[in-house]
Each structure stands twice: as C-alpha cells, then as structure tokens.
Length: 388
Image (cartoon, rainbow, N blue to C red; front, side, top):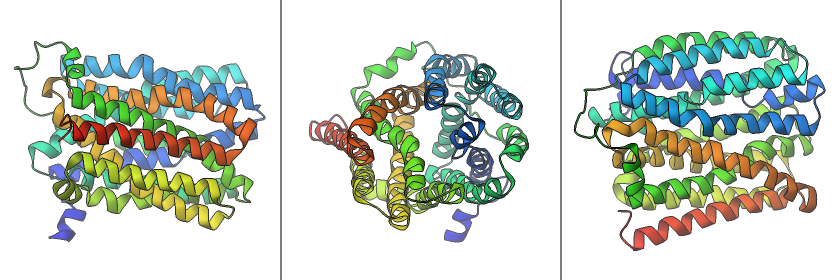
C-alpha cells in the first residue's frame, strides 16, 4: 500500500501530478542555487547582482496575479501553464549568451515574466486534482523536492568541474519534457456557481487572509535564507559543490514531511500543522545564527527542509480548500505574491543592511523572528476560531 502511494502509476492522477512536479523542480534545481554564483563569475558587482535578484519578485507582483486571473477567467490554466514553461526554456537558453549587465537584465525580466505564473497555476491545478480524487497533495509535491535536490547536488558537482556554460543548455532541455507533462494535468470540470463573483471574494475570508499574512512573514525568512545561506556556506569554506549540497539536503529533507503532511493534518488539524512547521523553521534559523561548521550547517538545513516541506504543502492545501473553485489559481497567485514577491523585495535590502551592520548571525535571527510573528498570528486566529 505504501509502495503504491510513493510510486504511483504513471498515468493515474497521482502519477501525472508527481511527474509534472518532478520535471519542473528538477529543471529549477539545475540552475536556481547557482545563478548568483554565475553572475559573480561574470564580474558583476554586488549592486548589479542585487538588482537582478529584485527583478524576479518585482515581476511576480506585476505579472503573476494578472496571468493567474486570466487563466481562471478563461479557463486557460493548462494552455497558459504550457506556454509559460516553453517561454522559460527558451529565455533561459538565451540568458547564457550576453556578458553585459543591461542585456542580462533584459533577459532576466523576460524570464521572470514567463516563470512567475508557473508555480501558482501549476499548484492550483495539481491541488485541485488531488482534492477531486481523494489524494494526498503532499505525496505528489514531494517529487518536486526530490527532483530539485537530486539536480542541485548533481549539478553543483558538474558545474564546479565543467564551468557554467553547459548550465543554460542542460536547463533548457530539462524544461522541454515538462511542457508535455503539463498537458497531462486535469483542469477539472467547469464550475459556474462562483464564476459570477469578483476575485476579491478571496479577501473576504478572514481565515484565508490570516494564512496569506502569516505566509508573507515566513517568506521574509525564506528570502534572507535564499540570499545568505549560500554566502554563509562559502564563508565557512564551501565551494559550488557544498552550496549545491546545502540546497539539496534541504530539499531532500522536505520529502518525509510532505509525504506525511496529510496524516499530520488529520491529527493536528491545519493550523496546528502550520505551527509545527513554523517551529522547525524558526529553530533552524536560530541554529544558523550560532553555527560555525559547514557540516552542522547541513544538519540545520535538513531541519529547515522538514519545516518548509510541511509549511508549503499545508499552506497550499489550506488556501486551496478555502478558495472558491473558480478563483483557485488567483488565490495561489496571491500566496506566491506574498512569499516570492513582496517578501523578497523587503528581505533583500533589509537583510543586506543587517548583514553589513550586525553580521550574518543577526540576519538569521531576523528570519527566526519573522517566523515567530507568523506563529503568533496563526495561534491568535486559531484561538479566536478564525482558523479551524
């Protein structure tokens, strides 16, 4: 029974969702941990790299919501998802060509426009597939973490040996089959009872707004982690291989918490599951502030991975359960805008200022504090009966 749930039939709903996540996040794992290191190798300065890093969250705010809303209104979720993945593949291939900052910036903006709607639309489609078929969403999403971890570790060793030139060709080719996998996803039956409502109905649900606010706060911690974890590993003596290992260990550690998320949610209920996730993540960030060894940093990354896996799957599931069917992609885009849009725009400059004035330990303590506030928000809403 467990074996069949971990290794679903390829053409079953569980198999199709799992294969999509495996392909997409494996593609992301081949470049995401290394792109800022590539910019350093090109000779870009810190200000230029910081500007490029802000383009993705800014584009998420500007484009993810309108594109997800269009996908909901027209029921074009699968076509827009496939076109966005195809555009990401082509644009990332082109990103390996320019050597000047203006040309790089233009392509990063274009890549971000294509890439930003993929996550919310894909998450909404697969989460709805899981709900319709009585499946554990986490058992499908965990294959994304497996793919990301495997490629992050493998490619970290490859790019250290071969350089970054092959990265753009390999990543683009990895995206190509994902276009096909996305076509296998099931958008579901037409739902008309919510279609006449404005998407602002999402914001009338106090419990849903609470989840979005808490997720934004956790996004602040995730944002400083993405920026400074690799830098800290390098500072402690690691190279590209250990940077890849850091991200890979965190992603592999997401697998058990994602797989058992449904069981934990059954016993703890949704809000308490979130509080457990926040505790694991916050504790890991406090540990980051104290550690002085690459090996211990990897162990703490595993704890953070456990927390993130539980946080992400539980949050996507709670948002999907509370959002109207007709606006499911829009609700997930709101979630993405908070975690991957607004939060990184604040976390980057704030974390940089703390890093310059107080050091890297203070940066991670700031992340722990943000997660702590998120826990207070969710706990208060649970006590008041807003979240159940």
